[in-house]
Length: 407
Image (cartoon, rainbow, N blue to C red; front, side):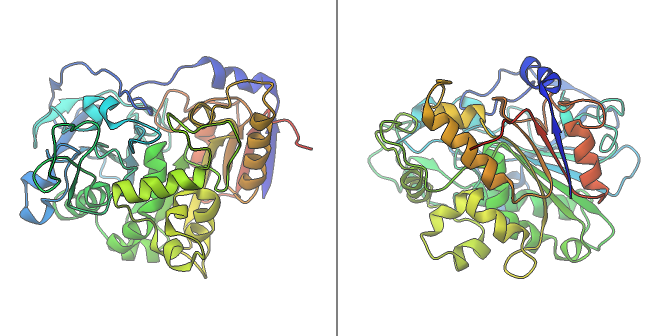
């Protein structure tokens, strides 16, 4: 395994270049009105809403009950490569984060109608230009629209009363759906049936999850292998988890998580599991000696995702700052002189040692894969370079930017 530690000159690109497109927090970035386009144009995408196509996918829906969906750009060259992105966008549980504060784009269907082709600018691994995205620009590209507020883990078709639905008194008649798992499954089934995603061992798929989408991709990893068994058997699946690594067992007095009066990350995970009626990767749930809600933590679930004997045997690349900006804000670790901040950074550094494929840094930022931070790093040691090496099955490599040694 190669390990590259890059000094502070490489950090400028991480710290100075803002992300683009969809926000990974709770707000959701404002978007211009959709512009029609002609199929075959580089940045022309098809909107697909499975629930409007087939009754079997009725449960694939957003919080408000409108149909969940995805955007699809077919390869212009007939490539057998696929990039499937699980969008991020935070979550809510009315304990640490209020559902009433969720942006509309994060809770309802796309304004683009099913079957419509519209122009969209997407960054990083979904950029269709070869000078920006040399390894994946010609791939079939899919962006799963995140509108379930549950980190893609809600596993029920029942409604739930939330702070966003204060008028509700009966969950049977109103409230929000948390159906992230059904949304993910319907998307893959729809791609297989209608849009050329074959499971015959001839195609390869790069699954990417950013932020909440990274938590969701890990939670749905077994479902993805079940939906694409021949591709999995042919070693055709790769997983990228970006900005989704968090630590179990974190509990620091006085550091209340989010808007709650809870300091235990494990208690928050349990609250999420109950609130969303969630389900996680069953290899982890079936083997873990503690509560299955803890499978939301990659510090636990990573071993089950990657183990060839006790898990799924997947090849996984982790991208995570040891001072991830969303994590340190959620855990109230913003002050540089806070001893708990350094404790978190060092605990993250130790936990990430398990990853043979890693891009990390001691600089505070969040995600890279689907933003214009895709080029973070220096020549030969850029995140984009590492992702290409991972896709091509080169020697595993770890790139760490300016993360000081821990005691």
